[in-house]
Length: 434
Image 1 (cartoon, rainbow, N blue to C red):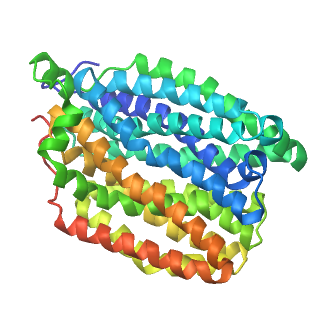
Image 2 (tube, one colour):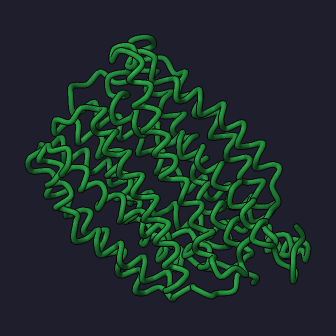
């Protein structure tokens, strides 16, 4: 099908969205399975520490892979704004596949001693650099292709759809593999299966992405020789306050995600849930998240971006402490309700507007760099820092007191997000061809 009136048809938009979501699902699967293993396995495999200290150390290693993300955003944002969105996405997925396989092949502490956690840290850093490229460039790729569509937020949300789909595949595959072997076998070698599979499937994703067109907005921009020499550096010079403001919005979402998913899985085990129960609860919440994300993106097109983001942030503020209180009951049903609201709704509904909000906030010349910078910087003091602090609070105060402090921490981030959303201009209807 050919373009009409100089812009892509819905079928062509769908092809780019599909290529983006396939690659993003693979990256999400790899990264999210890593989170599950960090919360449930790595403490005993790579660290010789007692109980909660081992869990905290494993989650901290997972966290440093998030803190390094801005470097990946800078490197791959520069590639995306100079060479093309598609090229950056292919290179990022290649690095993700390699680092994921390397983690799966890293020997245990019992085999090589302290070298094991050192190697784990190195490969987590590489994984984090790769993941730092994904959101901003993938969102830019899809939203630019849908620049003249009335469903821009819906198409942008396809990048977000990869998260619950990746969670479903991650939790589902872990539960399935665990059912096929003994706990001892899973801890010994079974957990490594997911990382080998992630590498193999990454190759498939690379092939799919290389066969897909770049966005028509960037192609037109590039053909007019308007690309910058150093776009990732230039956006920091021109729009530092915009990067900071947009980062405050996602700091809350990143914190909610990693608290619920990574820290929350280990937290539920500490409360008394089995690993399988915690993963099943996560699986259910992920399914609801996908539904809420579709609803959020649809309403973002019908109403606006800010309203959707604001609703999610207010719910996060109000439900922060009740979320952990319900988990502390040790009741499966109450914990599931907590995850559906605190994780599925807050993250899913708000994320229906997040990809388009970020993409629409920056001009074409450094759109991928700007969107990536704002999003990934937030992961340093949001997604990366919150689970580390939460792990320290849990280790210091224990189950029955720590949740109050952790809940107040989330409330603080939610308040900052509300302030940033109210201070942001509405981007619905903004032209992307400039």
